[in-house]
Length: 395
Ligand SMILES: NC(=O)c1ccc[n+]([C@@H]2O[C@H](COP(=O)([O-])OP(=O)(O)OC[C@H]3O[C@@H](n4cnc5c(N)ncnc54)[C@H](OP(=O)(O)O)[C@@H]3O)[C@@H](O)[C@H]2O)c1
Image 1 (cartoon, rainbow, N blue to C red):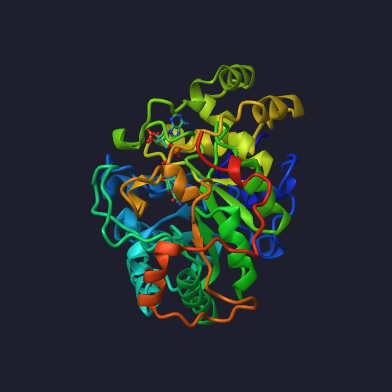
Image 2 (cartoon, protein in one colour):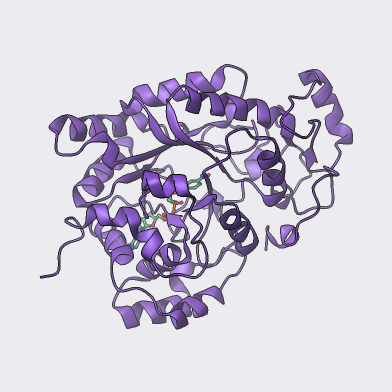
């Protein structure tokens, strides 16, 4: 008799290894040992779903077999999610080590001493004593008022300053030393930034969370991560169909309406969302779809646990990449006259400041000097423009 997804829940922990896809079979050893689940539940309600609804979705998802929850302090709902986790763990039905809980450091907490504080708040809110993964949400300390328009610019916004990022990363590394987090990782970084981070990190990122869906496959960054044993985690895996109006552009495309996806969905008898998720898991990334509907939460889990796509399906899906970035991040830009592409290291202009030396030495510039240097920022001479950087961004 065919077992339900619920009964098979723990098998999903290993599905990445056995999925028979093409690329990322270099899932790093630590994650295999740690058994990072192959699919997680996203928890960003895109401003249109209440904290209680998200918490209820987490509860439903856990009951259905999800063991991986993607949280972030900026989503403002960790306290509500924490009540659900507490209830589940106190019930004795599930133990902490069955779960993979991710959270993220928000951009306003990159400063000295802030990382521990932020992590401690997240642990308090989630009612946990450790996180499985803690990510630096964006590689900039730039933030903005909630709900502001995409044209808003913070007067304090700065470009990526590697030395400053590494000061934040050192604090992330200390969280691992202290046992508060099991793994640390990056999010929304480019190859060029990663070249510097990997060069200087004492504890390497275990994962990189990045936008990944069939219309935005980021092949160069994906391959770069896989080659280095860094697990790609894919956000907006369905193409974020209900994202707020302010995050939409006329040129955006809709994955779940793509004729290649709808035809494969019909052949497999699933919703196009299921095809996006099968593709994601078979390719080797870990998708974290968001939903508050039981029906969708369940079907998303079932999609990755059943009826794999054929090699022909995978090849057809590889061919529909439109390099269509949906989450462009305009509000993190540091100058009025910039385009969102400038965030993603594709322009020829000065995009990275690297004051640090090889080998993880902390730089010596004062913060004032770094900010002063921004006007004449230098590109890092030690980082070649890796193939694909120019295709890694924008449409
Ligand atoms: N690191 C970062 O910077 C970053 C950025 C963005 C997102 N994220 C994370 O990634 C998660 C997912 O991204 P996302 O929420 O932008 O996009 P998404 O998961 O691609 O799309 C979510 C939307 O799809 C709908 N949906 C889910 N399953 C469906 C199904 N089977 N059939 C039809 N519709 C379905 C949901 O609506 P219903 O509720 O009606 O099902 C929901 O509104 C976030 O929640 C967050 O945790 C991280």
